[in-house]
Structures are given as structure tokens and as C-alpha cells.
Image 1 (cartoon, each protein chain N blue to C red):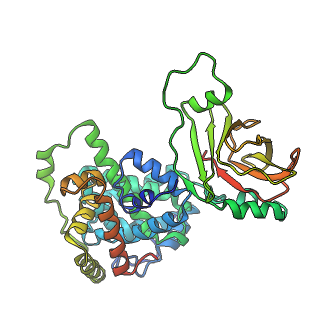
Image 2 (image 1 turned 90 degrees about the vertical axis):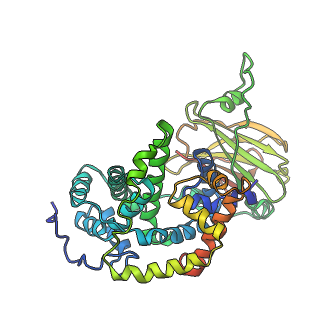
Image 3 (image 1 turned 45 degrees about the vertical axis):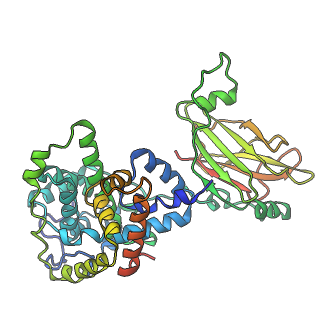
Length: 202
Length: 241
């Protein structure tokens, strides 16, 4: 049995972390893969605002976003051993899982019932802006904003519709009046520029 | 058959902007294209930063739910085998023969996503073994396209426990040699699965039970074949479980 709950050993929650600064998320994941629940709790504290913020932005409905966030962390626990540091950061790995689950959620919801527009509008203003205590986030956020500003309008719109809107590239093309098949190129070009401007990945 | 079209989907894939069919096809491609894997990984790093200004702490009760939830979930074991790479399958093989080396150079590697061969036309009353595999509901295809223009495809039906290989424009085996097929067991053992007919365009049903095979390999062997591989494979087709 692990001692926890509530106060995971050691890590100050204060600076909990957009980019995982100060907390080695990869090491926590590796420990979680071996069944270390305290490490997993630390990982949760360090990343839950990022994961939940994304879920909320994509799914919009707070109750559903909470379900997605919970699913994401259970999946992270289950899959922790599959994280491969050689392929990227722990944060990107987790955000990939989070984004996939959020998108799958909105699409499956659409498949059964059309999204309830009234409900969506009522919830649209949900606390996107209740951001992050953390001052550390602002520096990185600033870099990201600056990098986004380097994109063409179409690249930026296409990426945002895909990433936050959860739309497929075909839908994005229709939304932006682009010829079918060109949105995927805009998305890719934009992401490449973003990557290179921010200096992440390889 | 790896095309620019496949590569162009890397960005959309990285932000989950593919529909279910496209996603499945691209993942097949990814399992065989290291360049695309690396690109997707790097684009995901960038995408992960998009939501940086959106942090919202979930309700405290969620933390309790999650920590209670993991009590009931066993973490998966690590992957101990790389499903998409070539070397592990034949790691223990003896050093390669010159003949095989020449063929390897000739063939190189190039992989592609596949579409089912069968086109849904009416099945004839008596299906050959090959047709039964091709028409199986769970038939999966793994294709390789080689730089010399030749192609080889494995079609596997787990439910039937059978696999076949189809080749197109395949160069003949060197004089005195033959292409031998192998099924790899989950334990890593290579089981002889027959000798390929000496035809450039052929469909050949592999011997043996493919229900649990983890891969199909082709080696160049002396005429008559071998009990176990004696050369490095000229092609390896990983089979997803």
C-alpha cells in the first residue's frame, strides 16, 4: 500500500507545470509503469490542469470533459510502460492520449446524436481562462503564441479547427472553403513550422 | 506503394484529424515507415503545446476517483518486441551469405498500405484455399514494394489460421537457390512454411498454422530448402496480433 493520498511525497505543487519544468514527467511515468502509485499521483498533479484544459476545450461540456480526463489518466496508468522516451517527451505522449480521447468523445457523440447546440452554447464560455496559476506557463505560452503568429492565417485556422475543434481534415477543408485534400497539407505545413519555430521535436 | 499522399497525412494524423478509415490506413503505413513515425512524433511535440494557455484544474474529487480507479487496473507489461522492425525476427540468424546479401541490396525496402484484394464479387461455389483466405472477413494485408518494382503481399486470416503470399514481378532466386517462407511463432521460432514457386507472379498458400504467427519471413536457401533459416531474410512481414 502506498502512503498517499492527498500529499504526494516531495513535489511542490506550486510550480506544476505546463512543460513539465522542474518535474521529470518521464521518470514519474517510468515509476508508475512499475506500479508506483505515489509517482502516478505526482504525475497527475503535474499534468491534470493541462489534460483537463484540453479536454474541456475540445469536449466543451464540463461533465464530459471530466470523464475524458479521468479516462485519460486511467489509460496513462495502464499504458505507462509503453511510453518511449526516445520518441518524445512524456508530456507530448500524455497530451496525445488526451487529445485522442477528447476527439473520439466528440465524434462518437456526434455519431449518435447531433451535438446539442443550445447546450454547447450555454457551456461555451466555460473557464478557458481560469488559467494556470503558474507564471512559468506564461513564458512558454508566450513562445507558443509567438510561434503561432508565424503561421499563415489558413495554417493557424486549420490547425485550431483540427486540434481544438476536433474536425477531420476533410471537414476543415469544407469549413475553410479549401479544396478537398489541401487542409491536410496546411495542417502539416503549419505544424512543421510551429515545431521548428518553437524548437521541439527533431 | 508508399506515396507522398501517405506522408502528407502525418500532420492531420498528429492532431487526430483523420476519420476512422484514414486513421487505420495511416497507422498501417506508420508501422512500416520510420520517417513518418519520426515526423508524427515531432509534430505531436508541437501540438502538445497548443493547449498551453488552456490549463484548468479538474475538480479535486476527480483526483480521488483517478487514484481509486488505478487500484483496479493492472499496468500493461512493456513491449518486449518491436512489432514494426525487421531485425528482431531473425536476430539469431547466422551471418548472411553473399547471395542473400546481393538480393537484399537488390530488393531494399519499401512498404505500403494495403487494400483488400478481393472486390466483393460473388464467390464461386468451390473456393480454393487461397480464395478462402482472400475472402475471409478478417483478412489482413501486409505489402512490401521493392525498389526494383517488384511487390510481395502477405494476406493473413487468423480465423482460418492460414496465410498466403502474392508476388508481382519478383526476380527469380539465384541459380541453385530458392525462396523459402517462414512463419514465426510467438516464441520466436521460425517454422518452415514452404518454398515459393519459381514464378515472378504467383499466389502461394503458406504451409502451417498461421493463427498465432507473429511474422512471415523470406530467405534465400539452397535448392530444396532448409529446416531452419541459414541466411538473413530478404523480406520480413510483421503480423499484428
